Image: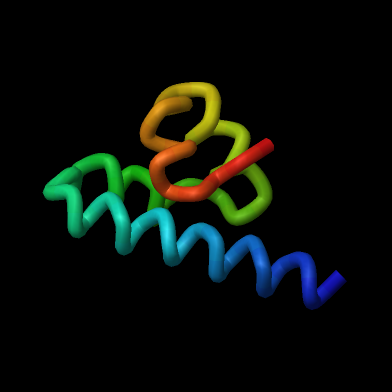
Amino acid sequence: MATVMKEQTDEKQYAIQTLDEMGLNQIANWLRVLPEDRWKTMFLAHWPTLAKKCGVRA
């Protein structure tokens, strides 16, 4: 279980960093405040193209 949470945290941090580098700071900030257990599904639902560019897959 701890490994899964670590992978999700790493994936979230990578997505946030990628968004920041793309100049999409508001979306990165939105992603930062999302709950750890729901950020991925919410990101994919609201921004599917950006999620793919950030390496986030379902």
